[in-house]
Length: 178
Image (cartoon, rainbow, N blue to C red; front, top):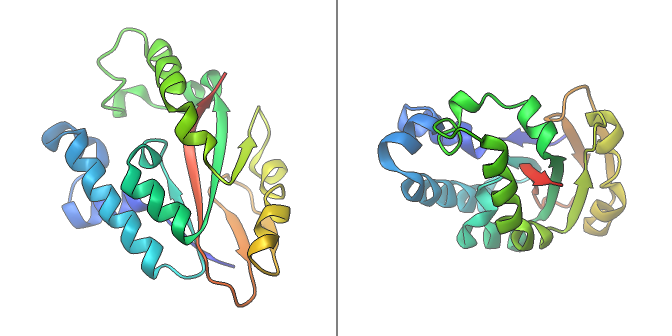
């Protein structure tokens, strides 16, 4: 089983602040710059890893290029309703001050479609469980080596075995679909 790595958690540990606090105090550009450095480092050093990013990570060209150059990028596509049902808007700096977070997510979806479409694989959640979705990347991941993909309960538990291959798999979550 591969290690599951979260760039956001590494940033929080290094900065001593949550990602929303970092965003609020230093701004989105500073957060994305630190996130890009963290992702680039993981892309170079995290062998045998599934790296779970948030939806904003691939919007930074440096981050996306590091992901594409070193591994397989999987876009976990969710509907606006699925995102809002599992999202605490009060902890999201881009959404918490808005009267209509749904409209903002729709606008972001429109703006980010081209970026997300460049992922190697798109998995539509559409109300399905992690277990139902997790087996889908096996065919694509197989192109990276001998692959076996399975899931435990919870979307964050995707286990990948690629034999001797050590390319990371990047899961881009919290992205939107209509």
